[in-house]
Image (cartoon, rainbow, N blue to C red; front, top):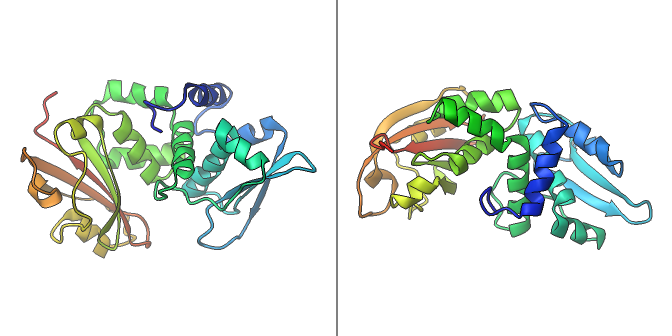
Length: 264
């Protein structure tokens, strides 16, 4: 479920929610406008992202989320809002089916990926990003990190959203301790032959490897590379520009790969 294949009804819902809120997206305003959602912020533990459930006797939905609001928690809240608004998900909630969510595009479950996609589209409006792309065709990882701060979204969500919308050949990788957790490529990157990597390890002499060793310093590591270092054998070989950013002290690294030889 991507911006290009998202159910039209769901996209219309997101467009409607954007009409009455500015940027950054006011999630509290959206929640309170419904009238039948109650939030329960608290310290639920470091592994808890969020949860929404339906209380049938009171006909209300309870949204549980961590008490400390930050970009990642905002994404988790938007993810739970997705479960509320996506018709199929809401029907399941009303029948009593609920679970602790795993957000951030790392779950293999379809419903979780759909709620992640909803959250990304809600927090990073399509029109807003399109306007930026008209002004500046290609955005670097540094640009995306600045946008993430502006919109109060996670760096990971911002990078994935960009890759799914840009006409440029680029890809984003999330890795942890040198092992890939996911890989997303832009349409153009897929078209040119790099729709998947074919390997899970992060190259030892890469900027991403250097970022893994330097957690928490807030620096973007970057260097030139080539497709043979990052991908299994392909019909086309090309230069690759790599940017990598360590996400705090989690062992997670966000990587952007782009093809500098692209000329449209």
